[in-house]
Image 1 (tube, rainbow, N blue to C red):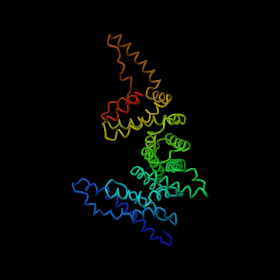
Image 2: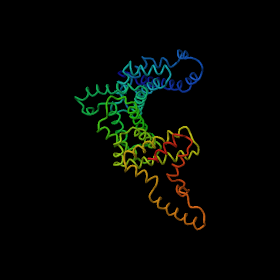
Image 3: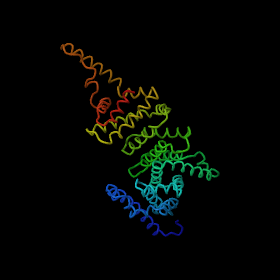
Image 4: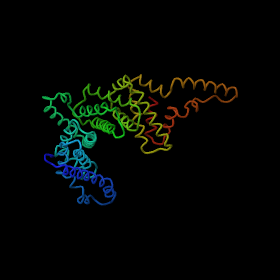
Length: 395
C-alpha cells in the first residue's frame, strides 16, 4: 500500500481517514438520534450520508490498511486512523451499522485482519489501543467473532511456530489478550506512566475484552492453568498499585468486573498474593463516593454493586477472606472501645434510673467508619445498592 507513495499522499490519506472517522462519529452522536426519536420509518436511512463509508468495499479497505507499514516513525499513523474508522463504522444499533458489523465478521474476514493487527510487534500504543477497542466491541456484540479470532490465531500459530517460538504457547484470543495485558502493566516506565501515557486505557480495554469473552462464553478454548495464573498475577499487581490518579482506579474497577466470574479457587490465590485488602479499599472508596453525593443517582448501583458481589463471593468461598472482611467492617480495637463505651453508658443510665442502652446507638457506628457507610447504604433508595450491601453483611 505504501510502495512509492510520496509523503504528501500519506498525509492526505491520513487526513481523509481521520475526517471519515470524525464524520461518522458526529453523525452517529448528533444527527442520527434525532431520526430515531422521530416517528418516521427507516426509509430515511436510504439517504444516510454514512452509507458509503460503511459499505463492504470501504470496510474491506479499512481492514486492508491495518496491515500497512508506515515508512518512518515520523509518518502519520495511517493504520490507527483506519482502525478508528472501522470502529466508527461498526459501532451502533441502527440497521445500517448492524449490517456493517455483520459484514466485517462474516463477509470480509475482519476478525483475521484484527488478529493480525493485534499480534503485530512494535506498534505505537495508540494504534494498539484502537485495535483492542475493535476487538472488545466485536466480541461484545457478535459472540461468534471470538471463535473466528481463535481460528485466526490457530492459523497464525501454524505459520510462525516453525521459525518463531514466541507464539507456540498461544492458542486462543484469551492468551493473546493476557500477553498484551502483561506487557502493558509490566513494561517501562512504571505503570501507569505520565499523563500522556495511554497504557492505563489499554489495560482497561483488555480487561473489559476478557470480561466480554468470559460472559459470552464465546471462545472455544478454555484457558489453561498457566494462563489463569498469569491473569491472577496481573490482577494482583493492578490491585496493589497506589491510587496515584483516576486512571489506576478505573483499571481496578475493570479488575473487579472481571472477578465477578472468577472461579472459587481465586479467593485463595488473591488471599495469598495480597489482593483482598485492596478490594476492601475499593469498597470503602466507592461507598464514600456514593454517600458524598447525598442523594441517589441512577449510576449508584454500577458504582457499588460489583465490588459488593465480588467480596461476598470471595467470603463465601474462603473462611479466611470472610474473617478479613469482617475485621475491616468490625475492627477488633473498635469493638473493644465500643464495649467499654456501652458499659459506661449502661452504668450511667442505671445510676440515673433510666432505661438501659440500646443495642444499636451512634457510638456503635461512628460517622466516617466503614460500618457507618454500609449502614447508610442499607437505607439507600436504590434497591440494588441496599440489597447488595445487606447480602454482604449477611454473609
